[in-house]
Length: 360
Ligand SMILES: [Zn+2]
Image 1 (spheres, rainbow, N blue to C red):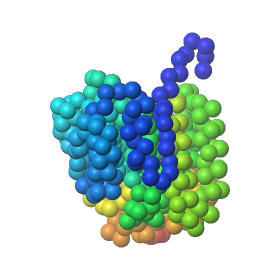
Image 2 (image 1 turned 30 degrees about the vertical axis):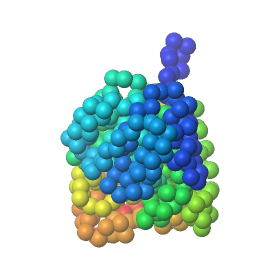
Image 3 (image 1 turned 90 degrees about the horizontal axis):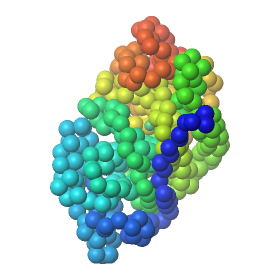
């Protein structure tokens, strides 16, 4: 960075991970010194996990509170939630639940003119959006919308996350989104070499070190789910905070995320988690980038699906090949996919060589 450039970092002020952390919310709100008018955004099932409890702890402290149930995170639905939020004019939005609620919360934040802040309360380990400023909505498929201020606080209750009915699957998917940083950084450095794009050696270096640490800890951690949740949460939080620090989406978004978005357009209804799509994308992009098999071995160790057949029987191999061919169009950023993307033959070869689809 030259002397005349200004780097503006906006990162969460408070991150609390532990047991029974929901009851800390009123203290966090009070410490912000804002008028205590709260709106909770939660999902149809996560309302029973955290939404109602948050309402209770907040109203017990005589704070005003309203709750919205987020059914859908399409752009159209998100705009309708914005209307509700604008009418209530909260000073604090608490997005409680999975990634969808958190993205809708950030979207609402961008539409409010007052100095509303957001607190994110994840109930799973969905993706690094829990702490980052970047917004993805189903528009109709997973699409980068823009950025907001990041959540001012992240409050994760490990007990609630451990009680998630699909806890193991979510931990595996969290690992999938975390390994995706390896290919994202490769793409970032590549764009720096080929296109002179701005690259932060500091942020890239911190993330590489964090990833190495994560890899050494994650396989032993799976023996103990509580430990695993803590490690995956920290990895996702570090990535989210680094995105805010560098104000660059490249920290956690590269060709693997572009493949994921493309696969989502091919299979919009399939029950696949974000991190699971990223895992498949990362395996194939790492192969294209000439990286070693380490990513594959981490994913196998934690039991994250590494083949489309392990993930979903109904998805034909052609969907993977088509998604690979159009992945480069999902974002204008320069990656290993180049400007023109893969030919059908190259896509089919990379999907087979990396084991994501069976050899034809
Ligand atoms: Zn992600």
